Image: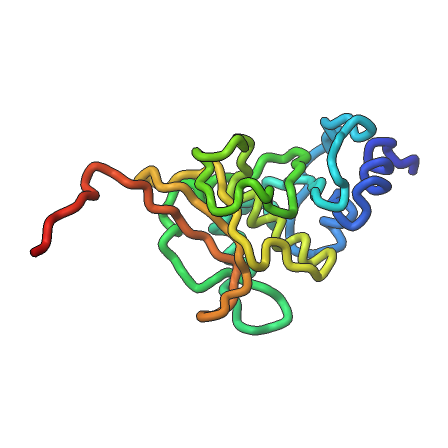
Length: 204
């Protein structure tokens, strides 16, 4: 069968950073490609990026035909990290009832950066010029499927700001698989937003 030109070009440019339908199937993780594969929506010949520093990945919205591809269901597949050869989640459960953890990944192509912008380090997103934050589900999906394709840990020692907020309005950040003080695991945290019930008192 004749291969689609956009898929061939995507694989050629991104190499190991291309996660398309064949790579997803080869993982045998239960991700379902439900329907015709969408066209890659980027002009790959005109993209002014370092192809070694971006992942071009096909998002899937279903797992095992009946489950939505969201963080809750990814946790049910990969579990908590137990020091085995396959990575899991960091042992925490604060987000299990949060709406963002039930958000389904879009069935489309996604382009996501592998490394932090140097100028953004140590700043909260509101203090930076970067406004195209990824979703927590996209980061989580990319982390696990990229490891199963390439046996490489993305964001193993850094956190990634996400577009998602928890129900209290605190911003979600994910990543930092390696933990020098506690067990390893893909982490999902929230950054405390200063609110009107935070304040100062005197002490003499």
